[in-house]
Length: 201
Image (cartoon, rainbow, N blue to C red):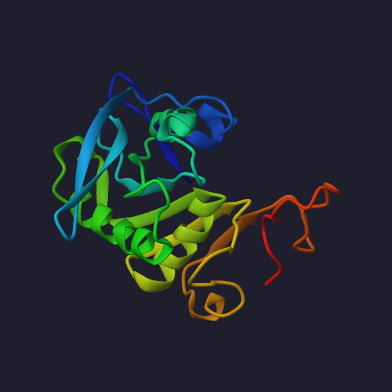
């Protein structure tokens, strides 16, 4: 049974008191804009949404879709934190990111989070990655490469560009994977030739 920490520091049972996870949680939060250092003397902008009280929940790292700013995912960040999940929404290095490098950068974000004071509510062990479109692909690839990642949630992931993940590397993924896509057949289905999301695997 999961628990949500209330603003007064008490703990309530989420299954009986907090109710619907789609509604905001009871945990007080803070939101901070940060710059995260990356290997090679690089850095990326990020937003940290963190519970103000320790809930010992997994860290969640959200990766945006191609050409989508992290502000587009502010509601996800705030919502997860309100349920006690410390959350980081991180940009990519460059307007057109290198997919492989972006995946490896998620590992650098985990390293950074281990010493970041605003993420004190993180239990320090469990990590989930989530991403939209390009971020879905980056999240899957990051989890294939980094055994510290315990769960992947990818919504409308794409697989364009190099390296390809599906089907070549999916068999190497050890973490549970949740796929949320617009089709089951890997086609866009819009009649105008748009790139498909959630490619067949």
